[in-house]
Image 1: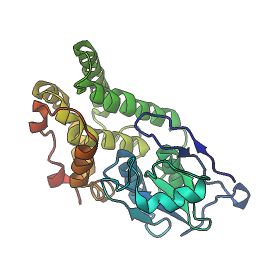
Image 2 (image 1 turned 135 degrees about the vertical axis):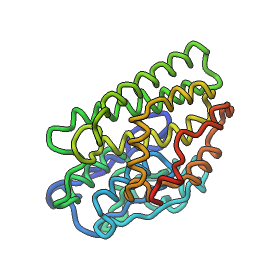
Image 3 (image 1 turned 90 degrees about the vertical axis):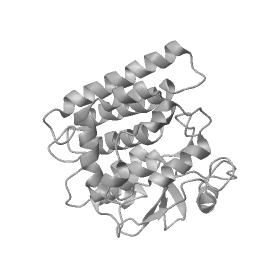
Image 4 (image 1 turned 180 degrees about the vertical axis):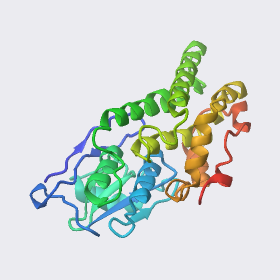
Length: 287
């Protein structure tokens, strides 16, 4: 199977996205073989953390090993020098940044995928064996809804609400969207341990990482009153605290790395909300 680089699908992912998939058998080109593939992740990056949590929940340490990368990329354009050979082998005359995450094929020395949602689904469907699936049959619509809520209603809304260059009305609208999304998730979690099923699914991975980002990154650019309103969702933050104790969630959580990555990338102004931490992630995480 030929893997071709595609145009980035979001402004915060400037590098080409490789979208190879793992098939069922040898006819697909890429198929599940223990030890053939490797993940290259920075868990200071939200996508890297999502994949690392998924990898841990599925117990794939020996089946698909991980190379952990520095929190702050060491190459111009936000890339990692360690990934440069993979990018150059995978795209002819590639000159862009060698960014993570990367799912690579050790047999060919090339990149299979850099698209986190595809990587997570392939790890679950092709490598998990007898473990309970993170993408259970019939749950894809619910999982997709949660993915959109996290991406649009939490992460993008929080970023816009804290934007120093945005109009006040736009920031207020974004904050309203954020609070409405958190309220909807709060109601969904009422009386439940997990988001869409009786066990952990990919929807829980998505939401937990979005909450980590909200409290460790986006909070720094919001005022104290906004952060207090965000914190006023007891079921949601109790859920986040409970999952942080799980080794697959709290284990790869790199709080220092997240802070260093944020300082290296951020051009916004710090606001009073930076002093109002919602959860003590270090105390509750299993790291």
